Length: 351
DNA sequence: CGACTTTGACCAGCGC
DNA sequence: GCGCTGGTCAAAGTCG
Image (cartoon, rainbow, N blue to C red; front, side, top):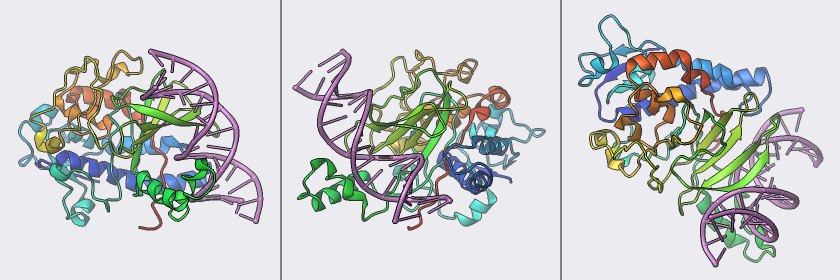
């Protein structure tokens, strides 16, 4: 697979699309693998995809150097003798990358920053993890209606029913439960619930099959923001926390992290995602212990790129924030090895 | 007292 | 159809 790079203001959105594309491509493989091997439990077999993605990011990319963005080659240390990988390109300043298939199939450009919410029919969207931590990969699935809408409908119908506690439950009867796009990432952390700048309310906890650790369910406390996240500890490695975000924040982070390494709303990043500038990527709280040291330790704390888009997978942002040498180091030592795909959910059967 | 967590019960989806 | 599991609800409890 090769990617073409073109300069474009919407590059990061396109990168997202690539990421989505990768996920979609890999989804089927993983499904098959899982069904052939160990059943259907979620996260049951993260490694195949993990490695697959790793290799994808290491894939050589076809770069249109003449058209690439200003300083991009220098920044990445790319020269005529070096073929950048997708990983490298993800660190580049705005540029466009599209897999050949996508170039043909997806004539429709991704939404401009001005309308950076993904179209409803866009089957795969990355949401806003705004997570402080490192490694991560996600998957997304799509299903669309909001809980709020369902709730309203359900309440209407069941008003006369006796138990108030049951009023909200029939809401799902007439409609298949639909989900927001989601993605998951893994983090080495001693704390389960990572501070990502948003405020969450825990609304449930469940024991997880084949895992001694429970899964916790959180909802964004902001009214009208239906973002949820699930947090669970990996049964394989108790030091790893798997966080799955679902949905997209409709508001800026209410909590700007203390000593947030001062990432101001990036003016020059506005070209990429600026119109959605209210979405400031919360920066990690480094007082917590969950921050893998290698992420930022040797690289500049972070470029403004880190805050460009709340919908951009954190692990990519962090990759982006590292200069190329660090990038190759990371590639060899850490991030991708930690990547775990989220559960690969079936596509909605009905549109 | 409000915000948040805990926890048992309930519901829906899925596989057998 | 049945049972299992994930996801959610909401009352009760806790905390600041």
